[in-house]
Length: 113
Image (tube, rainbow, N blue to C red; front, side):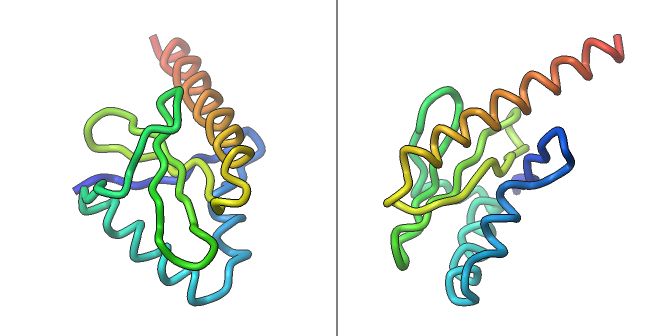
């Protein structure tokens, strides 16, 4: 079982939740199922998008995508969501979110030691 959490930006917002809330009910339900699969460790629809960002492809509607990073063996950080049409920009944003997450985590670790 994987621990799936959302990336929270410096302003306290989740880009993934903002995207998910804008979808229709059917799409949101399909994505909820995909998130359950990720939590169960089923990463069969996952491919690398670069810089440590992974892309989970959901074969529904316009080709939904969930972008996330793995923090260790058990933790998944949801970075962004999107569609095939906007894939290039969505991946760029997910990479920026992942870099921010890792930088802030490193700063927090340095403060604690």
